[in-house]
Length: 386
Image 1 (cartoon, rainbow, N blue to C red):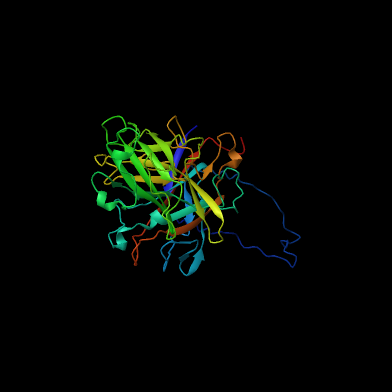
Image 2 (cartoon, rainbow, N blue to C red):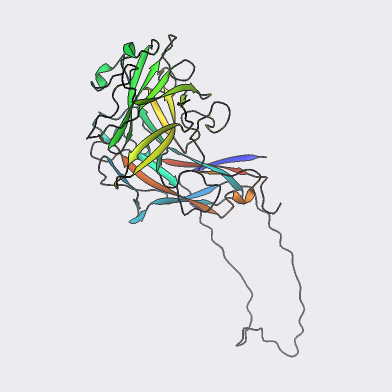
């Protein structure tokens, strides 16, 4: 099987067709009027058309504008040229059968919070998507009822080096972790709207390496109770506390990031609970990638990435394949090679719903323009006529 890769943020194709014909005299019934002395003779010419291989998709609308948003809120509709859209249409405008689709969103290189500059924030880091429930392709995967961040990037503060940047009510001092003798701990927030979950990473539990790429024995602890204006949430991450957190091992991905894994009794990645405007509870489940060592080319600052629909988040080759994989990362469309009809056929399209969720603490003004890129692969051996 030969695979081809294509990616697009904006794609526009205009095809003009011009027809030619010879003049004829038509009667009232649209039949050709013939003279009695005319003789008729038919001739034919065979026309053969061969289509070259091309992998391409068209994404519409090509841009969305979200304005006047309130911090701590989510909006599901953006503007393009005065028209309102709540979804993107992906159409196979190439000649090959598309068997996989995934997405990538832009994110800031350093922590924008606390800078007071809206231009330090990246709109792509606020972007959420979900497969549309109007899509009938059985190969479209994912949760069509819940929006997930594409690849949300959150930055961590080192307890050893920047203790002053950690809220004083957080208990995550590595010297009292009571779980080995960590070199350092990193504290950050998993933000969403008007809530966030605190997390901490303990590094070097039984060795001297201050890394969380999975090569050592670092662990991730994510609070079970969110912080909001009405409650502290989980604030004690030491083993002596009430352990209102979920602990994950950090294992290798094959790249420079580690990945949270081996949660007790679960293979669902990091699972976060939220409450909607109606008071109903819903869940978002992500794979969480970690990096602490700022000597690595991928990290100006320690951070984590939570991903659902970007299978190449961080620097992973494919989080769905191999031995060191995530449990929640998935393609938006994933068609088995033996079922051509479930692929995105030439001329066929799918719909992806979009939303923007702005966390608290973002200054007023226009944030930096973000980018959402869709990647596809095609199978040039596939054909429904075979």
